Image (cartoon, rainbow, N blue to C red; front, side, top):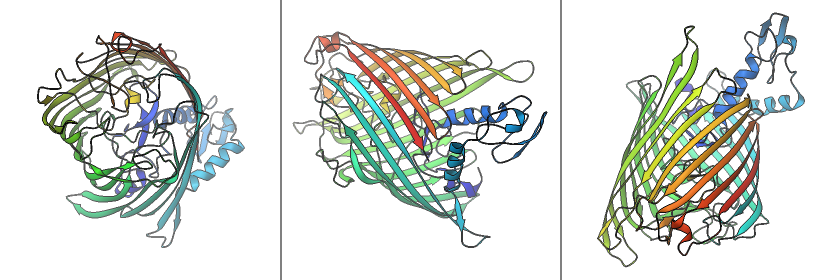
Length: 533
């Protein structure tokens, strides 16, 4: 990546890619510095799928197409033709439509140059509109058990001004609403007409061919596979932080250090029409290093520090350090022609947590906790429908005795739990063991179908059950939390339009039904079209 493109390409790595499910969520497919033209959150959902689909439609739009890129002239066996967003007309492919032309215009709006031609400024505009209908029954959520069918809208608009790679300023609004909900809406369901992001990037200096930047303001934090730090794009409101970040991308090492406070949507009480603000009682800082010097491999090393001054249902009053490492890699298997025929991939991560917690009686306790997870998968690239299979294991420590003076329950901090611990969103990564088998196919280049089976249990039967928000709930007489089946369909028309639908079932085990949380089995359905401009 050129230095000029660093500020223009989403330096924080707010890239929505495909997580363990292959579903579209905030992730870091290109680690912290994805190759984007601008720095907003709306640009990046379904990024990997968009890239693949665009490549397919351009290169195989019709018979005889050899090379075709947007806005270029294509040499075909049938003659010369102009390549549009859906194909090359002279080669027998699809003809560019009015919709394609409109989206092409909105792309042009993302990088408008003005001022000195040799050293111009640029300005960009964009946004997204997402609708989601959800029907859920008996989830482990506040106000339950119960059934609720409701609709959610999320509308975002952003503007960004840039000066080469030396300066950028980004402001983004959000209006997130929920309608017709039988159960009381959650804090992540609504945030009416507010500032989602507002920050400035400044290039501080060049040091040994490495640029060092400062970001100040309200921003996303997005690291690794988002098991610990995520913008939580699946929610209707996102998750943001306010503070400072130093970052320096490099050929072999990417380095970031941040000091922030979490941003509370509408305060500590549910009031979605009030202005968001930084939570003065909760500080979050850390250092994140990523090494990509070995081809097809990324090694992450990190230290995260959370200080909470007020006890909450999902965070104890105290100070926790988290030190960890992640190894993400892939190994292509080529045929005798040098083509990638199959692909092995893996994602291993573990962390140790230590510090001091204060229980609700004011007693100070030592923290000794941790987690480990492994994903191993295989894709048949040349096979019909490109099948993929993968296995997942996750362990997050629990506590055997809450009177011992030690806390051994792991805190998953600010995760994208939806991506890993079941799409129905019942559990967080605390006191949890999860085994999962998953398989996906692509009947067409734009359609992905996925099935995932989970087997959940408590890491320690004496500890609480922790829901998706990390709140401790009373456990039953047993360690089995049950099984979950997730079915998901994702259709990506192009980088601007997509739709996703899922149906999930959770059959509760004795750790739920033999206790205060007793309820019937859970179900959930959703459909979610998204439009980006």
